[in-house]
Each structure stands twice: as structure tokens, then as C-alpha cells.
Image (cartoon, rainbow, N blue to C red):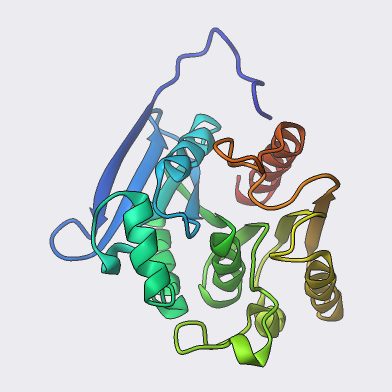
Length: 253
């Protein structure tokens, strides 16, 4: 749980940008891990559409503070470099990053994490906003994922008219393929996804007898972890953070 540390313990972490693999063109990523020998579970953190930004790095380090190795791939690297806002604008102009690209990068990140000498072999995935959608997709399409946390994932439910070459399948249509437990967090004032879409998402999980836990927060909309926005809800944020840490602890340790 957050702030449940022992004040007399020795602790530390390493956090840096890397390229996977490191001997040629590959996936650029932010990597953080505890400095002790482990073993540690791993988490693939998928960025939201605001970009491969400072918030994602802070989220990675918080999970590492609690004993997880984390890789946050730059899923927008095909759109060049610059500030997160500049790169995100380029991604939006191109219709977003292809789902297939994100799934490939998740697989690369998973393989990297499990190959580390401090790994316990278990890896989960988490994402916020569009990253929440991608996290659910990864739970359905990337072999080896042990647990998924989906934070207010927009466009899990998609109308046929919304499908594009970049996003060719509605994630909800892949629910039967979900291979691991799922935890989801949603704001009841959100419209992306709306409460009705969350209901559809939940109905599909029930239909296929999937193991899941959904938490819905009154008085909250989208992006409740993002303290740089008016959408930040500190009580809901810390409640969901504690639930996510406990969930990953249960399924990955």
C-alpha cells in the first residue's frame, strides 16, 4: 500500500531511458527497477495519448518504489521526437498509433522484463486513457501477460463506423480472448468511456466468465491520476492506486 514503507529500510532505484534491444534500432523506453537483487515482478506501462510524458515516468517510478520492474515504451516513436505535446499532436494528426505497433512493443517490453536477472517471470500491463484501451488489448493479444489494470480506457467499446486501419478491431469484441485477471477504474462523470459503455464492457466480461474487478467513482471523470489537470481527484486517485498495487501484488508476486 502507498506510504506503507519502513523508514529504517535501505532502498533505491535505477531509472533511465533505454532502447530494446540495445544493439540496434528497436523500441525506445523508460525503464525503472529497484536496486536490490529481487526477484521482482514486471509491469509494462502503456502511455496515454498526451504522450510519452513526465506523468508516465512518475507512474513508473511509483510502481518501482513498491518493488516492480517497469518498462514504459515510447509507443509514439514513429512520429519523431520533441516535447510530449508536439509528438502527441503528430500522432493525432496521423490518426493515432496502430494497435498492432503497440502490441508488438508490449511483447518486446515483456520479453525484456522476463529476461532480466532480477525478474520473477511475472509481468502485468497497465495504461491510462488510450493506454487503458491498449492495456486491455494486450491482455487479449500479447501472450504471457498475467494481469491487466485498465484506467478509464476510452474506445474499448467502438461502433463499426469508428474502426480504421489504425484501430481495426473494437477491443470489446476480443473479450473472449482475455487471458488473465482484469482490474478497471472509471469515473461516473466520464464520457470517454461513458457509464453506459462501461456497462457494455462489464457485460461482455460476465458473458465470457472473465475474472475482473471494476471500480467506479462518483464525482470523477477522466484522468483522475493526472494532478496537472482539473480532472484530478485525490481521494479516488489514491484509492485506485492502492487497489492497483494490491492487485498486481496478488497476481504477479
